[in-house]
Length: 428
Image (cartoon, rainbow, N blue to C red; front, side, top):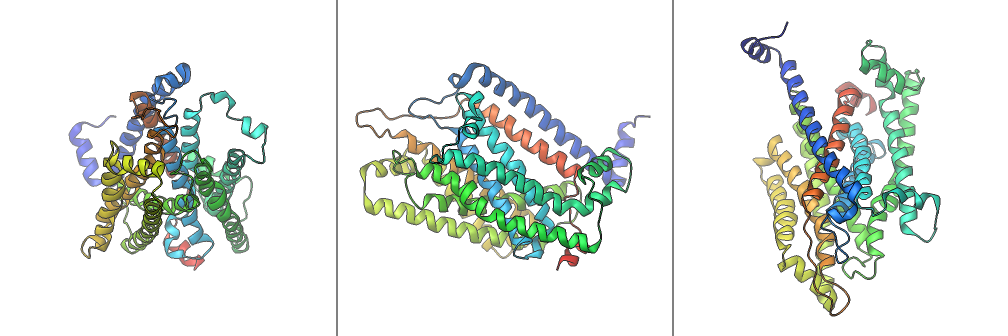
């Protein structure tokens, strides 16, 4: 029998699980609506081609490319954070270890969807796999992406294998049947088998470090650095900046998502672990800012006209709000102030705000890498370009992000991503 409003209100006040279920349903409904709206924009773009965007011959890479490198960075950063736990033994962060691997996998799926949208001939997406050119960075990059995603899925499976078995044996619901299927018939959960799982996780983590740094996000930075026609991108420091900023954004995203989902489920958040993650995040941010400072300093000392013109657009042109407002103030000044402030760094909410600011700031970083650099044409006499994403680009981006969040929410609901205190102690 359906409950009336007063009964529902009483149930919500007395049973917190009802609130959690309602929040989850509301969240999923929101994501489904966003996917439908975004899906319509994606369908429109697929039928009509890139002509329905604001991309031009002057600015062929826009918001989708910026989001693509943003999500690749999130993935690499989340994975590298997981290696601190599973390879280097920083078990104080183990509660976010499985979330890190799962987040890294979902972010790669989202990144590939964004770059697929940007392809003029999407049906040729597999050509780089079929026709391997060993001198092509892109050809290597695609293969690294695939290897990396298989590695992420395998390491996550080893991390969850014991709990998948326990979940499979605890009931007969869809969640239990799915867990049983995902065990792949590996039912041994003895201490020896669990130790072997951790050994494999360590091996895969060690293998994954160079893949993530050199092949995935460093490789994405190399894609830009190899474009000598763009003086701002053509810098040996660029791939390194990509990797460090990946660590910044990956740590910030994990911190924010971990806190938000714990609070949404009415669970306690461990302040000490969040503070530790926040300090790591600010440490990575400080390194990132230092590298960017030297990048700008050297460019200024060289005083090359073509590079100075790009910096001028970035610092004082139509996109200056993105550099000063989003990248520096929101993405650096605000989070550093929050973590440095004695009162604020003892607040989970404030640290979560700092993490969200950094994630938004890194979006600004990616936008500033992609767009202002293309505004100044390198052929003398050519007019200056301009680009701002149109409604189709924004709505399709919303749809892709909603798909990623939908997949993450389903995974967080069905998979044993949580690690309890006993399991952490066992691994110490």
